[in-house]
Length: 262
Image (cartoon, rainbow, N blue to C red; front, side):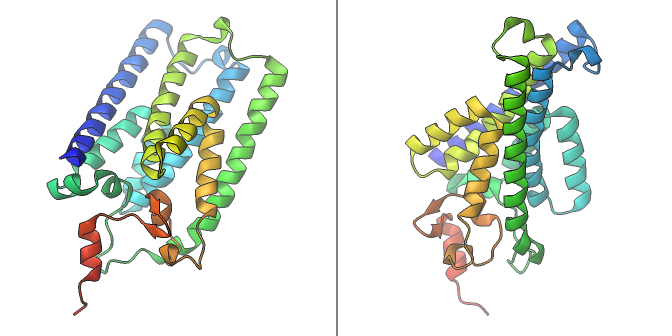
């Protein structure tokens, strides 16, 4: 029952957040006009946009992993780039709506995070090299964002100035932090204790995509070819929580894996 409540709660949360961002976008468009104006691109606005889109990269990679074909992946990614957290929220809600009652009652986060296996129950062979690629990608993106933050602090001073809070920067920050909520939900699910979860979430709030990149890279570096939990060398173990050296799986999945093969 608690698991079903979790699924309903998260579905409701992201529905509300999506509507909040849609209202924020429409309000800012009507009151402040087009966002495509050169004068809006202050140094801190540029830094915020870089921060925002690095988080979008993380979410887009999950979308590519989840989707069964490139057409739907590209469509969702284009929408993510154009509409930000409105699409993040919509995509997450859609994934929760796809869950069966059995999946919702077992472990909804597990089934939302992972894609459905192929008919033969195996992951595509292309995932075998994805871990190394993602390690490099997020290491680079983290360094880029850290460099951007330091450069903007040195050249433009503190970001905590009232004159910086233009309507479009405010809307961008709302957009940014809704994506942070999505990432924070994953971190809370992934971490084995509330202390570590709260620690990482605070870092996410304070340092944005620097923390996103560091956390993802750190998790990916935990993946080892010799570790039995990661023999397939794909990102499955990276997405879901770990207990000891074993990837957490709902009991029903474990029972299915134990069935004798015909």
